[in-house]
Length: 379
Image (cartoon, rainbow, N blue to C red; front, side, top):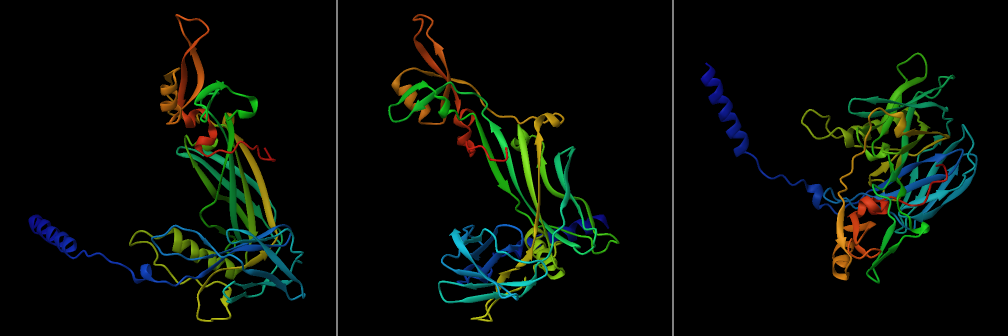
């Protein structure tokens, strides 16, 4: 009996392997592109709406929609324009919206197409009670806590922006000047040992208290940082933004989350058609992706220092190398992957530099690993 099972299993595997063929979905060759509209009409601050076009599945290119006319219209007869700021982003400092009034977004593209969202009610977003964190075995988990005492919100969405301070492994006392192929003492204004890096949320973060008696969101996970990450090597900050949604908006984002984050195995839910509240009125058959909501925006920023954590070490591979003080050696090393940070004097000729002590550029200059030297205003 056991042998029969093995034979049947082997035959089944052979059948699967022999029937495999390359499948090329038709969408890869489609020339159609669809409008994507992202953003929230902010009642109490700056508003940014991003317009872009879908691209082929094999492309990672972002294709912003340029030169469009973007207008916010209200049932209270207001009309506010959002101005282009580049890369498909259209912004306004303050739209002057009023809570509980209804607003919609009108878009006219450079090609003559016109898009219009449904009217949505401007909603109040409750304050964020706290952003907390807990160090776990695999890293650090961040949570958000909020509540609405009036029980009117029920549906929430969040996003976040991260900032973290980075230090170079070595503090350089010397700097390489490429134009003259020479090394000299560094000036204070040239110091690149401290910098700041940035990132933002990539997933859709949702929460609902619709099934609860009270409108409370407790310890909803918003971000996870793996143990040893550079982000917590010195000092880290996260700014969490909270938005209230209506039920239809929550359903849209929930479907978007399932379609984009839960696909990859045969056990995951199958993709569903995503329909938002934006329509092409010049071509009703055209699909548009996006959901416009209107609300106040609640924010909370916290800071975490490395000293607050238990055994959190950001390790860097930064071996020290000696480079002979001659033009050819200097050019080969410092126009390659190394930078100087210290010097070594000659034993036989006191006062003369015999070697420059160097390491990988990313270990000496934080800009070589993507950091900015401009200190954020909130730091």
